[in-house]
View 1 (spheres, rainbow, N blue to C red):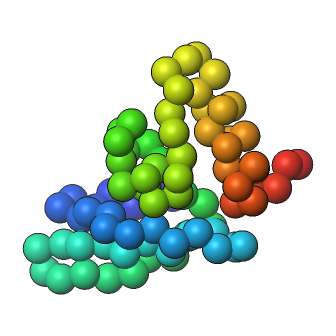
View 2 (cartoon, helix red, strand yellow):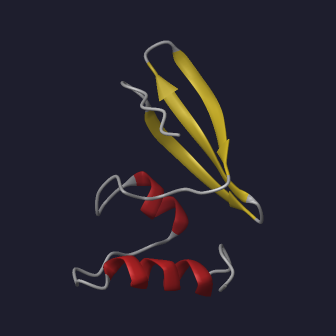
Length: 79
């Protein structure tokens, strides 16, 4: 299920052992959203990547590298 929310901006990301907590800002106020997974597909210099300490290397293996970065930092476990 995908829930598109217009005029919502991530202002903070807090990873946890079970997922992530996002602080979201909107024209109507702010709220917290929790999720099992966070896909940082909001650009190379995104708040999500910055808050998680992730870097993007411009290669065709970017998705694999990002998953490895998450594993190294303890955000996900290898299956």
